[in-house]
Image 1 (cartoon, rainbow, N blue to C red):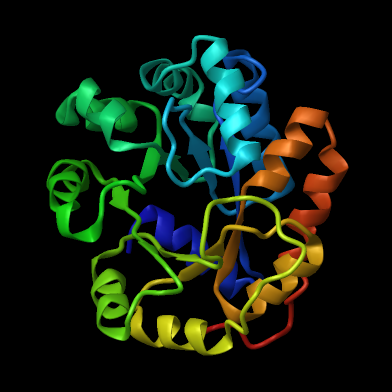
Image 2: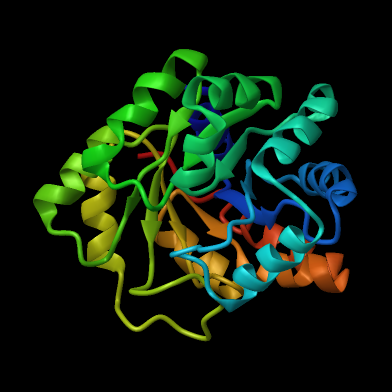
Length: 264
């Protein structure tokens, strides 16, 4: 069991759902990265997804794209983020999952990138523009360094592909809950019960729901279907506005399952 998966499993054993906030590294300046991560882990999050600003994101909605533009304007790069993480690695107690695109990784150099991830305490990697069929290049380089490659599965994936993604994903399966890009939603178009039941049956590792989850009520409803949730745009907005109370309410919602049967 990997460190990332272990953190999620330990949350389940405690009777709660995993809560993974997404942050845009360098939004507000790279000096905000350390206090943001330390504050989130103090709130009790399971892991933290650290987004890397990129000029041409394909999965990001307006909120995260704008946060990326603010970070890029501050001169933030993949290398600078990993160096910043390394500077306070000993204070980080939760697994970090880097979300980036393939071009910055390729420009960095795969082996050099892997070593920089280790130095920064990174335990997982999400690269949304690398499909399952091309992901072996990442696993071959990152896995020997103890870094998981987390795969995304969409609502439109047929059962055979869901099974392949579930088998290949490491740490957790990232279940996308909408057909489209990231961003807060007031509701979800489909009844996702059957989809998540199939996903969890096909997977031997935790399944986390992400995209569109933005309220405590949605954390509860999506958490009831999955092993936990990833919250992005709502966290990015709250950090930008300095609204820590909103983040605390979202995190607290993931503990609403205490006392309920939770282990598959």
